[in-house]
Length: 129
Image: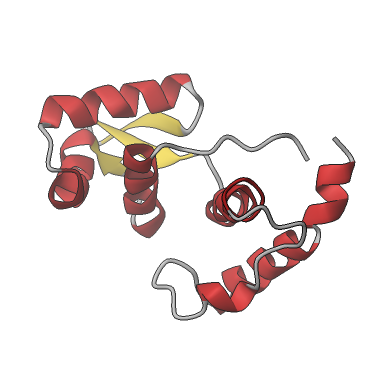
């Protein structure tokens, strides 16, 4: 597995909006993130453009409107965050327990099981680098 890009906080906010409902126009993305990010539409638009350059988002035209979808897989991205937090922040040599994600509104039971598998494979993947 290649090294996973860790999105910034605003990028993650946009990804979460798109994981919940996609495709979305730039205006719809802005409406979804405006309260959390407290910034202007132009800031949302610029972040979306940068995310496309980083290949985090795809752009399509639907019914004459530019719409966006996440290219980053939700579970893989969350696993990368968990690995980064566990190793870099907490200095753990073992994966974080998956029960710390229980009750999350972001993942369903199937995604939680997938996340658990990715986290349990973590030391092997890190050794392979």
